[in-house]
Image 1 (cartoon, rainbow, N blue to C red):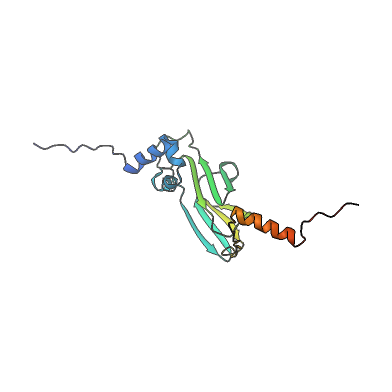
Image 2: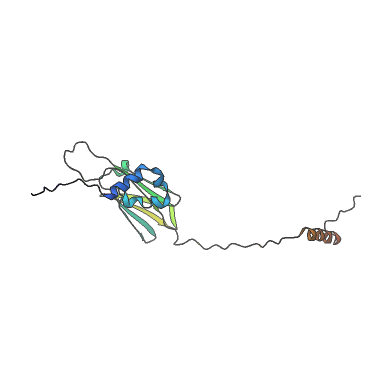
Amino acid sequence: MNKLAVQRQSRPLLLELSELFNSFPTFASLPSIAGLRPSFDNNLLRMEDETRDGVYLIRAELPGVDPIEDIEITVRDGQLTIKAERTQTDDTNGRSEFSYGSFTRTILLPIGADEDDISAVYDRGILTVSVALTEAAPAEKHVEVIETILVDEDEEDGDTQAELSTGENQEQPVG
C-alpha cells in the first residue's frame, strides 16, 4: 500500500531561538548574548560597514520604511543604534514573506569616531550612516610613577628632632 506523503509545517530552529531572546529580556541585556541576537533574530537588520577616506560608513537594508517617521538613529558611549519599524498594511489578501515589526541593531563604533559628526542618508531602501574619524588610534599617554617610602615611627621622631636642631620649624621669640 502506498503511503501518502504528509507535509508538515516545520518551524526553523533559528526562529525558536529568536523567540527565546524575546521571551527573556535578561538574556538580551547580557553583552555576550546580545551580540549573538542579530544572528538568530527573525527581524534581522542586515548591515555592512567599511572605513573609507577617514569616514566610517554603515549601510543597512531598510526597504519599505518611511525614513522620517520610521527610522531612529542614536549614539551613546561609543555605540550607534539604528531602530526602524515596518508596519503591515491591512489591505492585502495574499501571502507575504516580508518581515514586519521593529528592527534594532547596535554596533560598536571604531576608535577615533567623532560622535558629534554623524550624518545619515536614506536612498532606495538603503540607509547610509557616515561617522567621521578623528584619528586612527588615541595618542599614547605616559603616566608618572611616584615612589612612596614607608617610614618607621621611631625614625620619624628622629627626623623631627634633626629639623628642630637645624633651626627649621623653631619658634621665634616674641617681643
